[in-house]
Image (cartoon, rainbow, N blue to C red; front, side, top):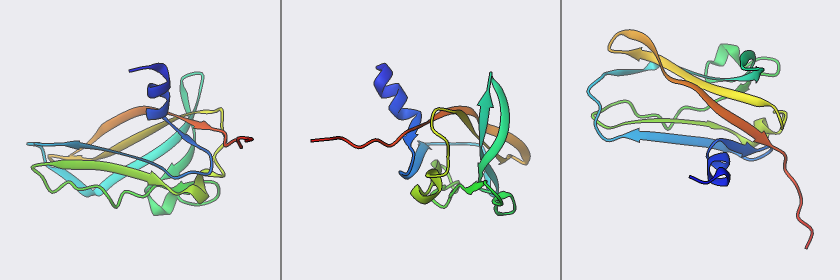
Length: 130
């Protein structure tokens, strides 16, 4: 993967919808969708800092924006993990700052972080002069 392709896979432009999804064709474990928590945090010097986005409605206060997980499908045997932050919400997220996205839910009855510290970068919008 080239550096540009990798950056595109791990970034989104401020003011655009941000969304990613991953699917696994066969999964023998049982994922519990109602227990799913997806969060995005700032990272400074490798240390997780401020919560800036969450799929938990009770956490969506102040500057914490919503993460939509409605496209997740854990019914199996194929499973899909998907998340989205709406364009209107990404306008408030500062570019040039490091972020991580994490997800956890009950898997086979145990709370498990199955998506740990996925690095994300917010890139500034810019106009192109023609």
